[in-house]
Every structure is written in structure tokens, then in C-alpha cells.
Length: 621
Image (cartoon, rainbow, N blue to C red; front, side, top):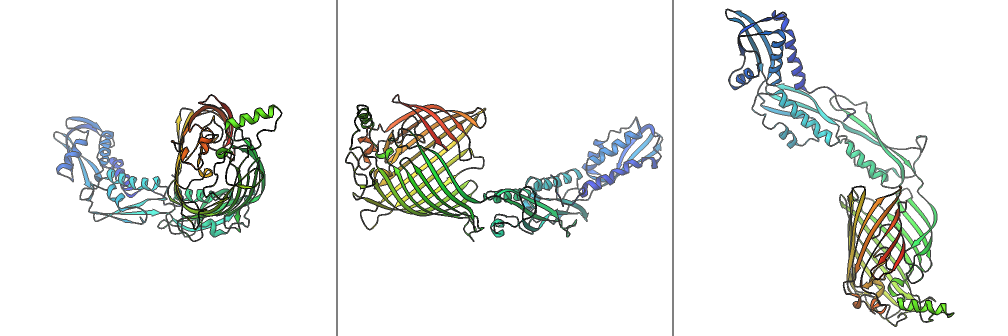
């Protein structure tokens, strides 16, 4: 890893080794340039004991054999490679029995201690582990150099700009000087797209810089810089984000420094949008998907604070949704990066999946129309009208995990096709729990979500509580929900396992029950066609394989059940409409990746021999 601004040069032990080895090149000064004689005796001077025995074992020169100058030089190299000697001088002396070769060596000093300077980021344990077993022993260049490499790798593996710059031995104490590149200044610069020229930015600098954890005086970390870039980019306001280091004038071998400049290219942050799409719940009793249109104004950088304001209207064949959202992704001054979302919403949605006509009644009405009649006049299409306001807070609690809490206040009414409030459906079953035209509820919610960086798993669990109010119109219940997904690669294919479940205890009007069946539940059934229960459990297994990018194919099997709780829902809407309470479906389809999520076209069969097309946007669960 290149470390700009970090001091260069070999560590001290390597320098000593090079200098010591140069002695082996000076054999000519001892008159051995043309040396080629029989050796009568080989000796090592300057060391004794176990170290001398180890040195003798390392030599290839033996008595009663003839050797050349190159052979002697190779033995000098062998002694140096042991790492225990700071010098080695071979000497030749003629004797009656032949030439005596004496290797005069000087052992390294004993390591009495290690002193480190400049290591502000390096943990003491790393130093202790690197030099373990060397204290109180003769300095070994090889082991010492290996310990230095361990220290340098510690910096490199963590993306830190630091290394051992120099080593000196002073009376048996090894003095290590470590050079860590420190951060000088951290600046911000807005650039114009295309030309790269500096421009005036729309976002307040302090809003951007609070995402930057790299501070002046810290050791420069490449990994930390990358995390800062990702954090700024995640604001969703920029087309490009980069961090450029430059060497400062105060840079020197003792205290190297770099200044960092964060460059950002802003994108358009708001405007008016319009579009259309497909809703899983249609206008014909939930049997087929319906079409929707929407108009929205959004501003993702309100007053340069990265706050988001969205006002939207969505119209469907039977649905109307009006919503106003304000989100502060990082509440000012909060050290935990808590976000806050305030919502005002007024919706009118079809109750066909929960309170629609039974299949038998739909078939009778169709036959009546074929005979020229107008269908059964008492079959009313119910609409759930809900007005709510709420606030929700969320914050990351650890990598991949997010926790949230919030509260909502809502008013719910059921309307007939003429917009008149009603308390009973076409089967004279109650549609509100209070028995009046209006149900009220104040709901407090807590949730936790898990989504790892790899993106191959998801988990969401929530708990809600609606306390009793001052009148019978206020609902009182507990509700818990959980949803999870796991993706498993199988060669070029991907197996996706998903499931969700929930339970409600307390007051339960039919519009708050769990609908089972449909495009985002058990495919092969119409919306809510399996059941409507106080509890639910739905699972899916889907195999996906690539076709022509961005299109992929899939085959799936889904299953769901209300766990026998359909009758406990007020008015028993599932039993009244003849829903089985349990069912499964299977089929195949196509997926198209798009900016708004995967677009799905699927054809499925259910366990009753019925089949249907499904159009969907987003994940199946």
C-alpha cells in the first residue's frame, strides 16, 4: 500500500545488516584474492557456548578440504544470515598442517528493552506480541526485522498511514521511531458537474461535515476516509464524492501531515413528478390488479439542511391517498444519528381484500349481468377511510442494525360506494369494533431491523400497543409482526427464502386483521383470498436465474395460514365469505430490475385449481 507523506527508508536492523555484510566484500585486503588451499583448521572467535556451536554448524568450511575465496565468502554470508552477529571478519593463517581459517565475529547486544516513540495509534499489545520472546536475549536481526514487519502490516491492514521509520540500539535498548501520518486540515469544496470548477453549494457545510469522522490530529486512515465518503454519498444529494489528500508545508520526517479536501458534486434535489403504476388490489373485488396514478412534489434538501419534504396524491380505481411527510435524517445535535419523520395522511382504500363480496356472490352477479340484469343491488363496495398523524424516530444501534420508535393517532371509518358512513357490511356483519361509525386509536410502536452490508438477508420485527381511551370508540390492542428474508446463491441462480407472521391480542375490527393471499402473499389467490385472521403465517421459496440483463426468471411456491383464528375476528369476515383459512400456490414469472424496484409479472396456480396473473412492484414479501 502506497503511503503518501509517510517516511521512506529501510528499518534500522536491515541497514545494520547491509553494513555488516559489506565486510565480506573486503576479503582481498587479507590476501585471499587468489586463495585456493587446503584448510587444516577452522575456528570461530568472539563468541562461545551454544551460540558458537550454532555458528560452527552453519559453516560449510571443514578441515582437510580445499576451498576458494568464494567458499569463504559464502560462509560469511551464512553467519550473517543467522542474524546474531553485527560483524564477521575471516582471517587466513598458514600453519604446518595447512591454512587456518578464523572467523572473527562480534555478537549483537542483548535486548534489555524496547522504547517506542510516535506510535499514537498502535496498541501496546501489538508491540508486546511482535517482540515476544526477544527480551533478555541476543538481538537477532531476522527475528527483529520480522517483528518490524508485523508492526508495519498492522498499519497496512487497517488502512492507516504509518510505519517504522528508524531503529537505533543504545546500550541494549532498541529505540523504535514510528512515523504516523497525521491529518492536518479537513476542508470542503463544491464542484461543478462536468468542468470540476469550484462553485457555491446549496447544502450547509456543517450538514455535510457532520458525516466526516476524520478529524485534524488523527492518524490518516484510508478505510475511515472511505467510510466518510460512503456516509456523505448516502445523503442522496450528490452525484460524486471524493476525498483528496495533499502534503502540507509542515510535513517532515518526524511528524508527516496531510490536508484532506472533501469534493462533492451536487445533484438536483427536488421537483414535481407524476407517474402511474399497478396496484395489487384492484377495483373488481381484488381479483385483478388495478391501475394507479400519482402526483408528488419532493424536496430532499430543504433549506440546505438535508431535510426531506414530500407532498403526494395517489389515485386508483377505488383508492385515494394524500400524504405529507417531513423527514430529518439526522436530528440536529444528536450524537447517535437519530432521524425523525412526521407524517400527515388521509387515505381511502378498497376493503375488498378484507370485506369484499364472496366468490359465490361475485359469480351470481356476473351471471345476472349476462342475463341482462344489473347484478345484485345490495352488494356494496366498502371503502376504509383513515386519517392519521404520526411521528417516528429511528437510529442505527450497530452495524447492520436499526431501532425505531413512534406514535400515531388515527380515525377510521367505513364508507359505502356512495361515501356514506356505515357500521355493517353487505352481510350485516359489523365493520367497526365500537359499533359506531368511527373507531379511534392511538398506537405506540417500537421496531428493530437488520440488514447486513452484504444485502443477502433482512429481518424486521415490530411491536405496537394501542392503550384504552376515554370512550368505547378507542381501540385497545397489542400487535406484533415479524418479516425475514434470506438469499442463498446456487451457482448462477439464487434461492430466496422469505416469511412473515403476526398476531393481535385485544380489540380487532376486521380492517385491522391480517389479510392472507395475493400478489405480495400467497400467489395464485386473489388479494385476501386465503383468509382474514387474528394471526397469520406466510412463507415463500423462490428460485431466480438470470436471463437477459436486467431481466431474470423465477419459479416459486407460497403458502399461508390464519392458524385457525379467522372466527375470532369481529364479524368473522373470512368465514362469511367462505375463505379456506389455509392455502398454497406455485408458478413462474419474470423480474425486471428498475429504479423503483423489481417489476414482477407472474402466473400462479393455487391448491384449488384456480390460476391468475399477478403484477407487482418491489419484493414479494
